[in-house]
Image 1 (tube, rainbow, N blue to C red):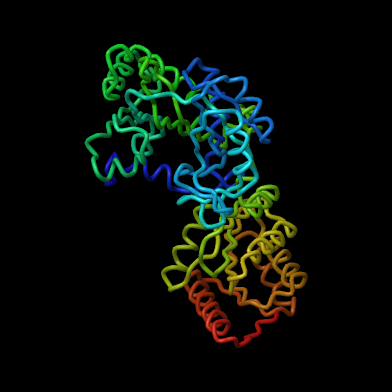
Image 2: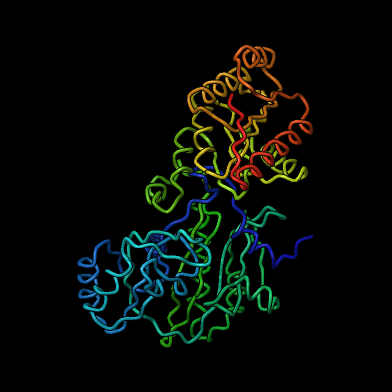
Length: 433
């Protein structure tokens, strides 16, 4: 069994595709701060800017000598990151509007590279200028979904302002968890228990309790799957503030949260994954060389597992769902081929709602129109499978068709390895269809 203290790491690291390829819509920090303010939760004064001139005006209005400029990019570890220009850190302490303008110019519309973003980095689409608050004590608090008990759960630690996964590894006793009864919510008694774990002074405890209850109200009303406050801070004036916030929202409930959905920043997402979403496809890039086209998330996982079992590596997770048409199948092939390292394509369809003949038509059209020269292995079962097999047989294309999953997986790994090895030594092996 996975230890309870490890679940927070799993929640943050697991990537499951759905709306726009993300199980949870994430917001920029300045959007999260604005949402918290709507619920009467304390946050530092500040505003976002999309030009250095806007940043300068905000700094003048804040009228403070202690300001922080934060790059707005959907990646963790911004403070320790760097830009493609060589400029260091996505978080800077500044003391004048002139400095704010200068730092903003170094950040805006440049790529911030962090340990989470990968080498490509994330473009900074805005900067968040806030008052700097001096902390007496920093804590960590999040509300997430506990998959084991199927209830919301509060995770709290008196060690805030740092990587919570590191705390879980080095000092797991510093992390406490509290299940929330969805019928009762966060009661005053529960809020008091949680607040007692923060390490705050007695003067700050009442506001901390109030903040915890308001955070859960926001979590429930906004269909959130995660609210992470790191750090939750008691200032030297005993004020309780959410200095940094990370939200995740349930895609299936976004029809109720139109304002939140409108805050989505697609510039932070992979362009191919955004294109896929527009066609009703769930597409996630991986680091292998075998493209996978399937219908259904469960079948996708099984397909990737069996490819690994036979020694291959999947290049993507591509689920065409139940509404696949010949046109969406061709779009799926185009997306798979955006990755130059793909040396084979495995089409694994179990036709229930989706029709196998539609898949076959799309497969044939893609093979013709895209002039594919890598092997295609197809395993089709279900609705109109006989018609699909007839279409493939009469197409004149060299498509390797199988009925058994094991045989199909073994074949696609074998053929992909041939292409891979040939490419490595500069030999062209043709699988023209």
